[in-house]
Length: 194
Image 1 (cartoon, rainbow, N blue to C red):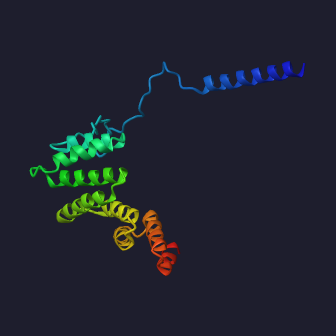
Image 2 (image 1 turned 90 degrees about the horizontal axis):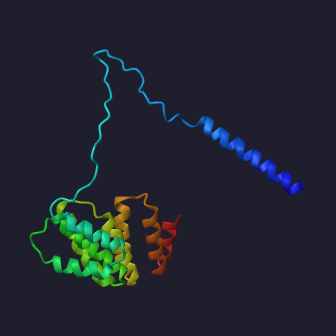
Image 3 (image 1 turned 180 degrees about the vertical axis):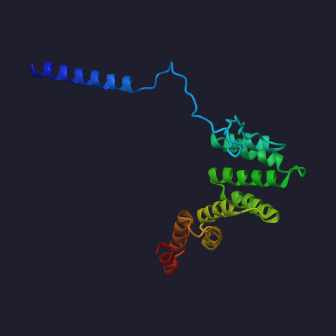
């Protein structure tokens, strides 16, 4: 008998909840009207504008976007083949060339080919420095590849460059501490952990 009693109480509670949801929901037949607008000459009236904020590739950026999509899907071999065949094209804009080299480096990292990744990322870094662009993300990737190859001084140098640009970057500080720890530079590792 108590089971039936509990069931009836549960049913009653659900009915109350549903009634409350219906009572507090907005009326779909009522049209939403904006508040009164002040028509004085010194007031500004907001006008809703539908802006197209879709990023569209320009020039050679279309293939870069397609390669990024392939990279996100895990088609690293196809990305590397495509970029290596395209990379010899001297007519590429420097920003596109930099993006392709960074993508190539990331794809090589994902394939476990860190030496090839370092070559591509160093090329991307040279292009970015020549154009006056930030190299923080490239330096972070370089640090990861150097660390994967047990090249502790080069990895430390890359992560120090990241921290030089972004001193509050905890992930880079943690990576630098780990590099120092693996290189058995205990005092420097301890200083990064502190």
